[in-house]
Image (tube, rainbow, N blue to C red; front, side):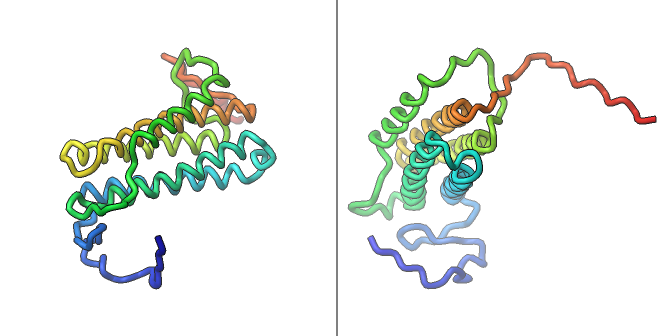
Length: 206
């Protein structure tokens, strides 16, 4: 498939509408636009994670490089998912790329490959675990938001159930990846502590 983009700005969205696959124009605040907009945001956050993995202490770490390759693959799938969400049911076409069971199963396999390196959780953990780990937690929360927006589209029959299932499983994977890269780079995880007392007040300087 060949794509050519001649102009970045078109002015066609100045009226608050945007085009979806098939040529129809819809409001920019419609559920469909919100859903694939969040998927685009998620893809951007993963790009940020990959940029962090390419720098500093992560750059020479073989585990970080392997994680980068996985995230690069997921970015490609997220673009496919966004394209599917941007395609109304009446504009679906033969040969269009769809997210399906094979994509979801692959995410589960990614999770299963990382789990043996992680200690079982005995408490909730707070987002952190170094720069890459913290950014993966941000990606996880954006992914959950995207899932929440896609779920009503699935219920209304506007998109395949596999789109929401993919995001659900991806959020699980991002959580595991955040923990995994923290372990592999020696970054401590902060555990949630029930009823934690606040730190002591600073002494006033005389």
